[in-house]
Amino acid sequence: MDNISFQKSLRNVNQTEREGRGIAMNGLIQISKYAGMRNDLAQAGGGNTSVKIDDQIMLVKSSGCQLADMSKDNGYMKVNYRLIAEYLEQNTAAGELTEEEGKRLLVQAQMEDGHASIETFLHAVTDKYTLHSHPTLVNILTSRKGGRKELQELFPEAVFVPYKKPGAALAEACYRACREQASGNHSQEVIFLENHGLVVSADTSEHVIEKTEEILRKIADHLHISNRIYSSATRIWDMFLRIPKLQEMIVYPAQNQYLSWDYIGDGLVGPGLWNHAFCPDCVVYGSRKMLCLSDDFSRKDIVDFMDAYGAPVLICYRKHIYIVAESVKKAQEIENVMSFGAQVQMANLGQEMNYLSESEQDELLNWDCEKYRRMMK
Image (cartoon, rainbow, N blue to C red; front, side):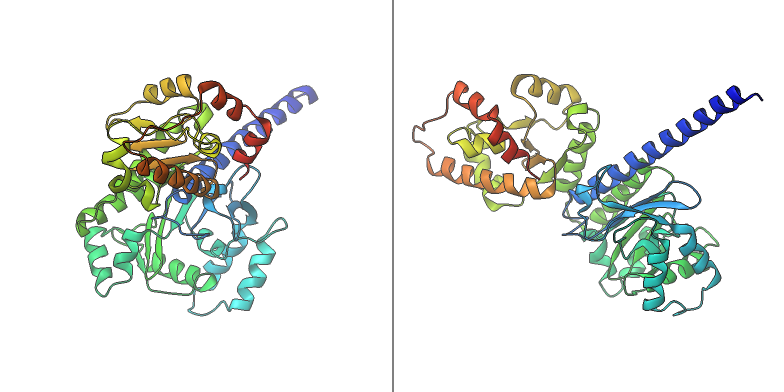
């Protein structure tokens, strides 16, 4: 091979590697936002995600980062997971790795400045994409007496790990449990952590999400508990992934009592009377109009709304309000403003209200200082 051909071949290899890493990064962001926007899966800064780029490098959520805030430039650390995996392979005795040794090993494995999640040890021994979440439904069973038996009956192929402190001790326990239960029909795809949560890992980010949803549906049916509010948020978000302008947004289920169907459903939203364009903040934070989706909504329904009114901020779907935002923090700010809007409207039912004109709304939505305030994360 001459030098020109060699250089061309090298460029092609490098391009392929870059594309592969880009796909992996997108998958990591996808599973992070999926879990991070849902309070039933991740609370506060809890939960973590990872993706293995090759046989040495892993990207794992940074300590203290909100899952929903993950982006190509923020929220993850690069680590040499092979160092941790090899240590666990060579030292499988219980209690072999002390907390101090674990800290030193984690620092040694980090390939850049920052703080990797304490759960990096756990991610070092799972599949390519891994989501460790704290689902409400799962923890109902992992925290109850006899819950392990119920989970084993529901998911006979899963691995169950007794409680261990998060970090090195938990990773060791997971590694041992997976090895001990590797025979028969057990796999590492699904791991239940006693008094803690759920680990799902797979070769693709899509399969991680699908498997997590499948587990939640099965447990919800078993417990006779509805999880529709959260699964609906995921359905809307999944449609957003097919719309370029909305791909980086999250769909946050409103928690505020003043945005509940019990408070605003029959009086405002159901009859089509919701109109928050009575003050500047409501327009800036809530945009022009609420998007109401039918049970069988399509991508076209959302795109048509965007053509007429711009990107949606408030969505009503199956008698629940969802907030579209860049982050959980921003969604909660919008929720705060919209709960104010709901209370003002409800108190004025039957009264004639003063609304801002279309031109006044346009002026606010195109005002640079207000756009900046709205977009601040």
